[in-house]
Image 1 (cartoon, rainbow, N blue to C red):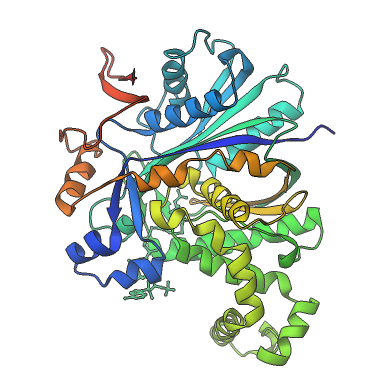
Image 2: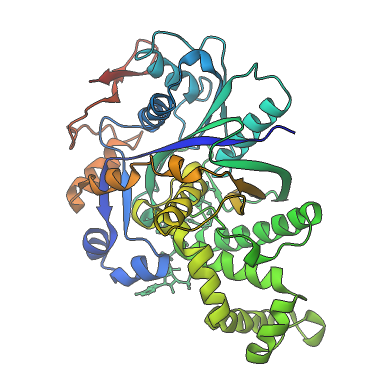
Amino acid sequence: MTAVGIDAMEIWTGKLKLDLAETFAPAQGDDPGKYTKGLGLHASSFPDVHEDIVTMAANAAHRLMERKGLEPADIGRIDVATESSFDNSKPVSTYVAGCLEKVYDGDFHHANKGERKFACIAGTQSLDDAYNWIRAGRNRGRAAIVIATDTALYARDDPGEATQGAGAVAMLVAEDPDLVELSPEQGFGSADETDFLKPNQQFPSVDGKRSVNVYLARMREALDDFASVAGEIHPEDYPLIPFHTPFPGMVRKAAALGYRHIIRDTEIEDELAEEIGYQPVPEAFDSDDEFYEAIREYTDALTETERYQAWYAETIDPTLELSRHVGNWYTGSVHIARAAGLKHAREHGRDLDGRQLLVASYGSGAQAEVHAETVVPGWEDEIAQLNVDEQVRRRYELSFEEYEQIHDVHNHDAEADADSLTEPSAEFVFDGWGRMGERTYKYID
Ligand code: HMG
């Protein structure tokens, strides 16, 4: 079976930065520790006035095509995943193709284009679509460009406001990939939930605390389902486990739950039992509440053990390094977690050739998906091409007043206007409105 997976990726962050501890916390009257320690977030990325989901997506895809020496004729599919779309009919991928056609001689007239929606998990679903298309033999030797792009804004003073972010991840999906090969096995945990939704509105209605529990419940189901097809999962078999990361504190909870769940009835549980006992079982308790309390206590003790902490530091923490500084990118979030983990592994000389990553995606509403990816020898050369650190460093730092203005500029109902805070260069920019209310774009050299 020919290997199919991610051949290369590029990341484009929104060009503005809001520092949560220095700028946001004082304005909200909050202790900065709530953000930096509690949520695990230091800063958010925001789009400048001339940026939006199309420009970020097109700029990431353009970098990807240039770096891989691709022409439009090499691409048979452009899939965009987003939950920040501004059009209920015309997909973002058509705008992205239109942008790219401004800088290439050829066109994408024979490429299939679409837009995927299922909250944050849509990015992974688009990867699946591209994978299935190639596996089905319908690609005529061409590759797919999959882009996850979002401007994750919440209403002002919503508890989610601190978790905002904006950016795009473009991935080239192809045969014989240079980065990771996707596994055919998948596990799903999916249920009709109303924890986070946008019923014909730009900003989400969120039941924040419940959304955390729904994430954990669906993720647990997906892990069980994955184990039922892929065989028993051993947490220490995977050098990196990238999770969907709305904020790093969420992944801290998911990792503890996942680890506890996976080690049940294994030699790891036996070895840890000397220190913290065995996991509580429901039959030993008179009520659910007592059982849940005992599980909470066991999980707290587990996360204090040396074995767990060493596993977390090596397997989970590196995947959070980008997210801490850019916030939630919704559909792109699990993909920047993968990139951050691989970047860290390269910088620390870890040998991941042939090793498997366990990738845990999630979208509210709600669905979790777990699959494995095999790291392809030579992966370091691909990851070395990312310039995301430089992009993150170069962002313009917003004052609180500028943040308020930028939030209004991107609020579809606010009709605010402002000048860009950064000077566009060698990038696609938002240019105004066309005769049918469409957004228009141009390339600035
Ligand atoms: P909140 O009420 O602002 O924060 O909402 P909190 O009071 O719960 O505090 C957060 C954490 O900081 C807590 O830690 C506090 O103890 C701690 P925890 O108990 O959870 O471990 N804390 C402090 N720590 C140190 N020093 C301090 C301090 N103060 C407090 N001084 C909430 C938090 C997540 C509810 C909010 O941010 C929210 O509504 N976010 C949006 C929804 C969300 O991100 N949900 C995550 C799961 S759903 C998901 O991932 C899908 C999503 O990406 C959308 C999609 O799929 O499309 C969102």
